[in-house]
Amino acid sequence: MIKNQWYGILNSNEIKKNKLTGVTRMGEKLVLWRDETGAVKCIFDQCCHRGASLSAGTLVHDTIKCPFHGFSYDGTGRVVQIPANGKKAPVPEHFKVNAYVVKEKYGFIWLWYGAFQEVLPEIPFFEYLRTGFSYGSFSEVWPVHYTRAIENQLDVVHLPFVHANSIGRGNKTLVNGPVVEWVDNRMTFYVNNQVDNGESKPLKPLEIENYQDLFSLEFQMPNMWQNKISPDVRIVAIFAPIDEGHTKIYLRFYQRFMRLPILKQMVNHFSNVTNRFILHQDRHVVLTQIPKKSELEMNENLIQGDAPIIEYRKRRALLKGK
Ligand code: FES
Ligand SMILES: [Fe+2]
Image 1: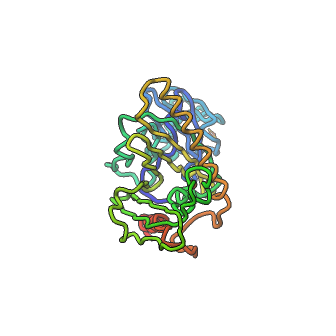
Image 2: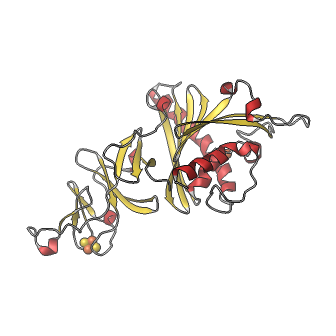
Image 3: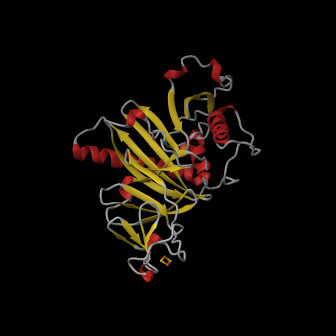
């Protein structure tokens, strides 16, 4: 996991009012809830007394009560009451668990994974989608390391094979470029695949003129992707790391061409039916990949068309300080 980044980890609507939600993200057990103002709180989901899951406890106002012996925790992870010691007994400092910085924005819950900082960077959600769009979404867990799930969405070579009957129709196997550009930690890659007539060679990135006019996709480190289908239609995916072997993919269809309430919901719903079908074509292959996790130095024989994947691996290594 890359440290000191905002990770999208959940959909906002997964954290309900008056309810504790236990999840594993970033390889850690977390319990999340909403305090009385509706703000989302998140602490380590393991009682510091004798290890019970706090998410199996109860929410009393703004504190969590452990189901085992009733220790109460506040949103900073401190134990504020130990019933067996009496209501008035002071609680020693070291009775606490880790608390995590979480924010709710753009319909997602974001977790700051890294060292505490007084001033945190802005959540790097795609600016274009922050207003004016509606969306439909679905999510599913894949038993893969998140790097493999991400790289699948950076892979412009697989389309005519994995998606021969959907988005990869037309046997466009020859991959020109792709051209990859970075701005801060956001990659844009421009794609142009064509039918192989047996005579052309794929163009190198520098040979592609006016590449900005081509179809493009974006990837925002550490775990967010956007398919820029048209000015009015976008698909966004967030790859939430569960642990070393599991990833929860949140996929959203954003659109702004249909604004009428019921029709809008129908459009958003049905687009996700298609998107799920396409994602399952990917899933079928990605689950077979070995090794499970990708690294910069891993002995795969990559080709020119894999440029976005190579760039992702390089950037990941850089941010991890390797
Ligand atoms: S295990 Fe939580 S109070 Fe004892
Ligand atoms: Fe795919």
